[in-house]
Image (cartoon, rainbow, N blue to C red; front, side):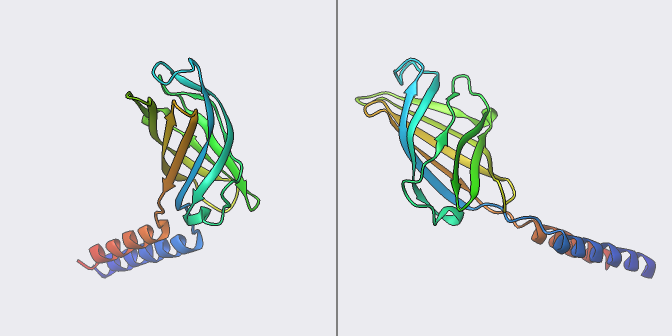
Amino acid sequence: MKKLFKVCSLVVMFIGLTAFSAMALPMMDGGVSFDGNYALDTGNISTANSFTSFSSVRITTGDGIWLGVLPGTAATFTPFAFNPSSNVNPLWSFTFSGVTYSLNALSGTMTFLRESGPIPALDITGTGWIVASAGYDPTMGDYKITANQARTTFSFSSSSATVPEPGTLLLLGLGLLGVARI
């Protein structure tokens, strides 16, 4: 029993040391919003299947890691199909303080909804990986694009949340220590 306790203790120590010495880069947290102009393949939200271009795209707000980004900062959007959906790498990108941020949209999570009425609209939602050229680990994030037929403008929001990886490993190690004491 003492030998098992010693082995388990060594495993816990190894996991704990590895968790903190090989600590991952921080994940991105917060959200960013954009607006700009768009063009559709058919020119009409009621029949369109893809965005063919985006122009005058600017950041409107940011929080979390994007809190300091000035409204009006230029961004780039990549044209893409939403019916059927396609991977878009990157869907958006911009550079702030020397770091380029982008979102790679995953087609398997992309959904769209056409809204009829006096002003037709298009809502596209999905999930993708937010990546940075330096300083952060890739982070899963959600996005929403809303396009309005009346003004040929769109808005976009993206958000992510952090997951503390070293803390998870520490909890695993403590759990193993608890099992070893039984």
